[in-house]
Amino acid sequence: MSDSPPTTIEIMDFSFRMLKIARPTVRLSILLLALLVCVSCGDVFRPIAIPIIPTPPNPAGFHTVFVLSNNGSSDPGSSFAINVSGDTDTGVAKTGIAPVHAAILPNLSRIYIANSGEDTLSTYAPSSFTNVTTISLPAGSKPSFVGTAQNDVIYVADTGLNTVSLVSTSSNIVTKTLAVGANPVALAETPDSKQVFVVNQGDNTVSLISTTDNTVVRAIPVGVAPVAAVARFDSQRAYVLNRDSGTVSVIDTTLATDVSQNPVISSATVGVGANFMFYDQHLSRLYVVNPTTRQVPVLDISKDPPIALPTIDLGAGPSPPCPAGCVVSAVTALVDGTRAYVVSYQQSATCAVTTDTPPCISTNVTVVSTTGNSIIKTINVDPGGTGEVTAVPACDPARFRRFIVASGDTSRVYVSNCDAGNAAIIRTSDDTYVLNLTAPNGILSPTAPPGAQPPPQNPVFILVGN
Image 1 (cartoon, one colour):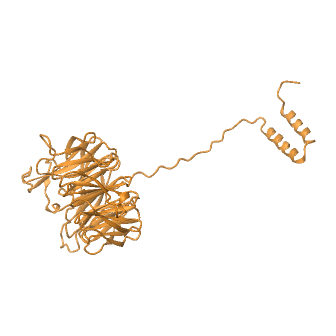
Image 2: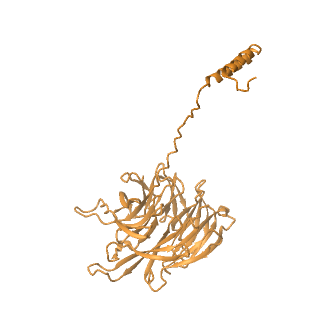
Image 3: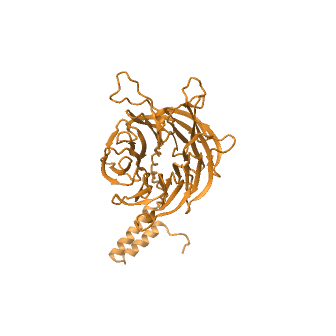
């Protein structure tokens, strides 16, 4: 017998001889096998390439910030958008009278603006500045704050009525009004959308709203004159800033719904007069603004009670960024956790330019390294070369005469300058002031006399769109 492998003919001959003795079904199977072997004869393997279509990338981030401008007590305000990547004004929306605060839905589909001067909300889609819907609130509500962690409802703090209005985002009407404590001025909803904490400045409490049925569960006593609140990213803690006590109350949200328990589990001292705080989720920190001391106390809230970190002192040193008489206004931080930015302003009875009408105000942004909270540099962000602008009396009562935010991509920091009527832009790659965007002129009221000129707008708040 030869040691060479059998040929195709030999295999077929063997297969047919086996068919003679096999049962019909077996014969058929063997025949098919032989045919397959024969068909393969002489073929070369050819790989088949099946194209794999990659998953399309997610849409680019919503790289826009929105600047609210107040135009006095009788004329409409405005909201203008700044494109982060292009440093350009991309559109203007008309608001109601005296806009003071704004929020954007989590899905970025609509913006809601509280108009404290006319008991309304203005809402529009970021893609359509001209299609603005006005939502009527109860008469006398004087809305001061809007917020939500949901896409179907907006919560409005009605400071004038001691209530919170619930607005459906599908119908843009008020669906429910809840009685809360005296003088509600701020809201904080937990990220899990289960609880809303209403800051009642007038009676030193926080009202807890359960979003399951949108009812007020209880009033929680906190410190004196609470003015702000934030909820931690894990929804386990809420923090309330008490201006006249100079403390931050820590609320255990897991205990809040049990009326037999006191959910305030600890507090931290930040100094009497503290009136604003910013939550840095990346580092789990609270930056607290205290204009009375010209300081920014910093708290590590990853632990209970919060741990005091080095304070940012803008009034210290031989050439302090915020000398005596200066006001520390607001603070923000980059989402990568590397730097914080503090805006302050100084009013003077004299002006650098004699033709300017005193008083004049200069605005500075202090850049802080989050490692040790040390000051890196201070940047003047006023337009022109004098480093100051003429003070505008209409800006005196503004909640934020200067406000500051960081863009979601960490590339820019924005400062609203009420007196200058603009928004300043800082490039964070080298912490350089690069541009001022002037707020668009105001919109005349229907009762304006013939030939009247549109009044200037005064920016009072900035909303980050991403």
